[in-house]
Length: 356
Picture 1 (spheres, one colour):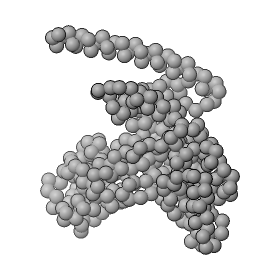
Picture 2 (cartoon, one colour):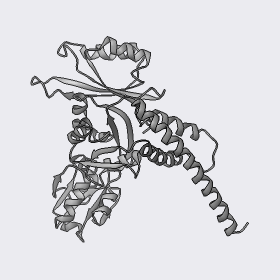
Picture 3 (tube, rainbow, N blue to C red):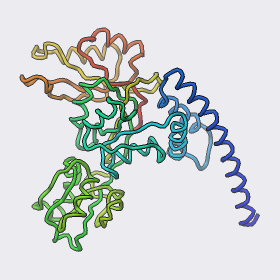
Picture 4 (cartoon, rainbow, N blue to C red):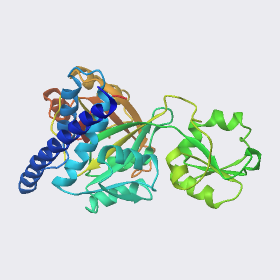
């Protein structure tokens, strides 16, 4: 078979894929009308996860889990917009890592609202200017994002999904020589992730200017002579700032976990994570936290994270605890925990657990 014949075969397969996608979207549109009538949620992370895992279980030489996920996340995003076009608020500006995470889940067709801070993302969703909000919650080298935890602890919005994104930083500047750089713009957490690069290139004495996002850093560095930005490669290209060095992060395993917040809750998928905020009574009493941890153990619940946070509504150095654990709030053993600790555990959401 010659090349032209092989291309003809590919064209025929593409035509078949196109027709099948059209049929899929017809059914999606019908489902969307039903969901709107019943006022049920359009976004079903647990259903999307089931589809990807079912397809990934099939034998294939060429399509592994990541490839299937990449293809179907875009199909899902198009499907959701057919069912009901909805806006997505994210920590901006355009080109931020949060923007990248949002597009990975909601696709290129969704309408995005770039917000200046995490508080504004919550407000956009609470006031129904957006259906979903995408915000960072933790980085595997720099820990938790305090603003996200504090706002979750005081909001009625819930975590409905998580996204784990590999983070690769670039060093971008209009300067021809690195010795000409007098200021470096970036998000505070990004400075912490690139300490070895900064020290090894003798930039330790250069002024570090923290800003709201790495994309904003690229914008400012483009406008400011003798400056540079630690930002994503995408942000450097977007703001026409030349990349001097790529992959400057201290750890090759640098990842950030983002969460999607909204005003509804998910059904159990069988592979879920639940997040809570624990505001313990009698915290000054010896063993109070230990008693809570023992209750988790008694119920057979596997904790995956615990992080303390100051309770800002109090002035006596009171602390609460952000906790992640395996399972869904509707699982019987987890229901028992909430019944036992109903005045101390604020449920922040149950959602499909992603492998990081």
